[in-house]
Amino acid sequence: MLFICYPKCTTCQKAKQWLDEHGVAYDFRDIKEDNPTEDELREWHARSGLPLKRFFNTSGLQYKALHLKDRLPDMSEDEQFALLASDGMLVKRPLLIADKGVLVGFKEAEYRQFTEE
Image 1 (cartoon, rainbow, N blue to C red):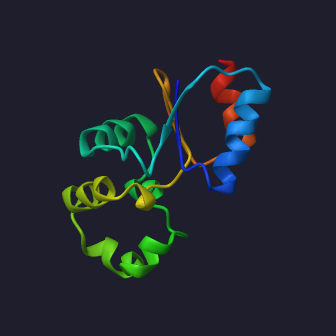
Image 2: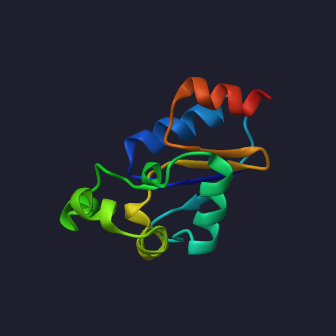
Image 3: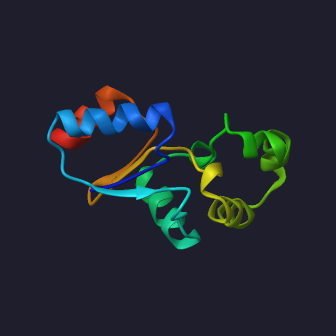
């Protein structure tokens, strides 16, 4: 599994603690230092089954500074992927990627089900 997060994010810290406490093996990637590429984001989005908007960190400073709440509905999917790939801080985190799928954000029940199957 690949665990992508921003170490200073409290939600990411909770997710990492949960993974560690439950003995889940994962590779760690700092989203600010190693931003997901457009190709990665496209693949993960397809595998997640989620709307693309769920991949945006809507509570982040960059999201608000760029007025994305108003701009996203008028942007094409290609433009949205390019924007997400331009700055890791725009991407919702944590991301947990495995062969069977992709989780965006942290909900303990989802993590439990995802890692136990």
